[in-house]
Image 1 (cartoon, rainbow, N blue to C red):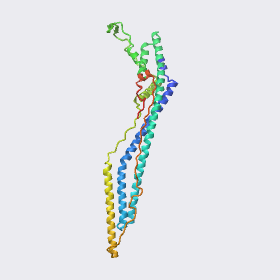
Image 2 (image 1 turned 135 degrees about the vertical axis):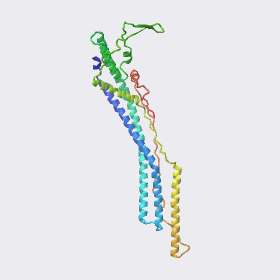
Image 3 (image 1 turned 135 degrees about the horizontal axis):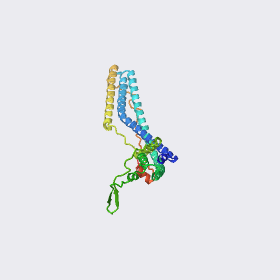
Image 4 (image 1 turned 180 degrees about the horizontal axis):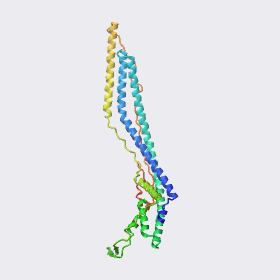
Length: 346
């Protein structure tokens, strides 16, 4: 049958399909990368406050140990262990913040990738729709030839219509659905005539073409091709211009109370240092049997050299726009409108 034979893919449509599938995959890859990047940022944001709290607490403990070691209350080994633990916590916090900075910077790069993919999709979409519209003419011309053959008695009209309906079901947007729905041969037995509001006659009755003997089945290669085309059309219908997803804000304590708590810990550590200095002064005074004129001060790492000062990186979303093709009939037929996936927004 001419209709089935006409469903061979054209080189133009094959090339347009390949490019369309590639650009859709590139956008999908960008979406997956952006989602993974967002999870990394959210995880780092959630972990940073706890790491800051731990680093602050261990730093205060290390300061306290150094002060008590000067007063011979704790051993040098304990001091070294406390300092090493505090340094490790500080390094962990620094690395986590650097990880967050890298992920935040990558977020902008990935957003540009998604917008670039949208621009390519718009170009490839217009070429694909144009190629599909040209390809649709092949089965329509073949169906016309089959219908003429049926009228001349060289083919069965029922078989021709069964094949046409089988193709119509699989073809994206339908091959010629309105025509097939309205194609009827009314039986002369018991037909009825009615008139519309302006007097035109309408004939109704038993449709002799309503009952098809055997439904037609598409050749396997043609069926696979039409399903592949339909998958691309569905992907274009679902495609939306890229919008940067919002990050989930972790449910953590407000920054101000946390800073106050850190300050209290530093105050407690300073108080311990002051008391240890007083105790040491008293012991030295008794040892030297001198009540006045003797002073002592502690020198050492009482400050916090190398303290990390966090900074934030910001990322703006640049607006982007792309253009669609305008093969109007084919747009409307397959349901991929001009406003569907053709304009990017940020």
